[in-house]
Image (cartoon, rainbow, N blue to C red; front, side, top):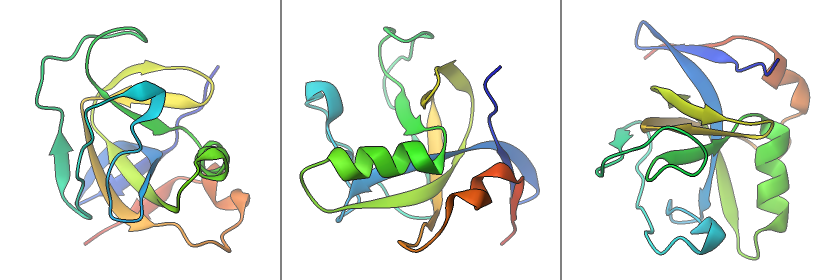
Length: 127
């Protein structure tokens, strides 16, 4: 069974993931995706197109399930990146390392010195 952590953000419970973005908050364009998205911190981003459930379904926003998975993406990406703790709306698909969702809120940047033990707790953030 895959464990997906949760967060309380603005009084509501969401699933928690980790989004890896470029230094200027753009999507990485993984798997030759030509649709580069500009994200903002502490704002919900909605996928504008029709989204299909499943791994191969159209659309959706992919995030890392754990901090260690996000750090692996960061290590293998050729340019400077940043990692954010990210609240997720509906989970449309998941596998061992990734989650597909319809909307995200990148609410907190992960520091470079942070250890992996923090990903095993329910995280609560209120604003």
